[in-house]
Image (cartoon, rainbow, N blue to C red; front, top):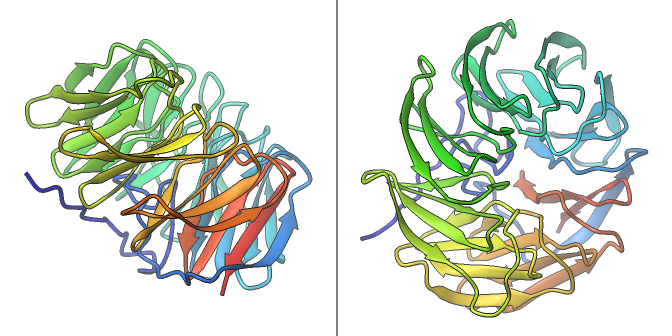
Length: 360
């Protein structure tokens, strides 16, 4: 069985963009942009407070949100702010998504915001009943996003009105993955759900038997995600069953970061301080790479390289085939946010309140 990756790129974004968390609706973490193998620091920008959110890159702008209760648009070339929009509360891990000239993000007061990217002015808000750490996914005229009020929401992208909601039995922390008319959520209630985007009807549920903080990554008829029971699962979407589980034989730590998928490889960081490369068909380990601290930063793949951050304060670049380190940069502060790669640049935020941009 061969796994193929088909990236869905919105017609309203450029081919070189990274418009949402994990780069595309399938949440594969694979860049459509090229990236030089010789990277240097081009600029930094200080947000004024902690950044757990991952950047989005669209055209010549970088969009980043932070605990300073703001969403900022930065010039990709220089890092200079183009505008700053004030949210109702601090922004935690919710990462902005940009589509049709609108940026969407959720805050810890439970409010989902829509902001005009040309002016930085708010277009609408929707208040949920608890904090929002999920990142939005935009599908056609709908914004899909989870809330800690145990609901998955579909909001009208232009007005913010609720189209439908799906109740779960736990906070919806993950970012919804989308493919072929279905959205998939890996839940804190230990369930993996498939929901119809059109009407919010639940298509099927798979019992993961463990609390899940990671978002699912999709490749053809499979979904991949890690759990707090120290395992990575490969779910067959056709049979609606867990096809395989992976667990390191010695190091028993949760998987919080989301996976990246390239070819027949699944790449995922763990709180065991390691990046794991698994065979997508069998779940067998191909290689592991050890850092100095836990990895909550989800990896991004460009060509034959994978980049990710670690709580040891470093950004790493590895060869996907061998796991050998080919690049490293120490920022000196923990990195829990995920890497974004777009328009020939690598952008990542660290817990020193700064955004770092790398390029040739």
